[in-house]
Length: 133
Image (cartoon, rainbow, N blue to C red; front, side, top):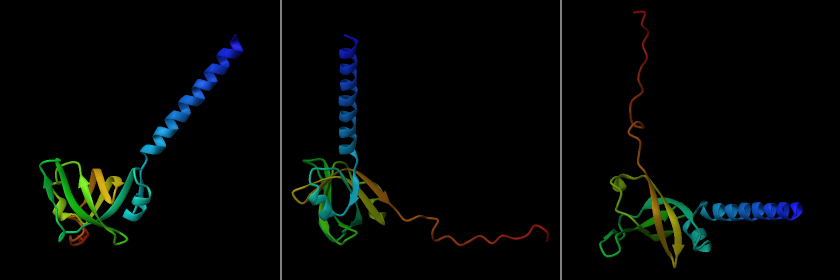
């Protein structure tokens, strides 16, 4: 009786651990370009790029999404459908990181990181003076 309970307990722990690892690995995204995201269609990916200002963009009231085009670091341009409103500092961004999945050549993003230029990069260095004057 004790051996069967031990076996059931070990089997349950192995099953539970396998299930946790499977769910954890499918939720982890990787940094890729749009072509690699197409190869991983349906899996969560992170794409770094810049907004293509000359291409169509805007908020869709029907689907409640912000649509724009983005160029990744390899020069690939794809349409991005962001499941939220346009971020306030979107136009000022030097770089965007969209997180989501690629489906039929369109990247569906549920999260976006907007990287803006630092206001401290252009500041003049401060001259340090001696207090012994």
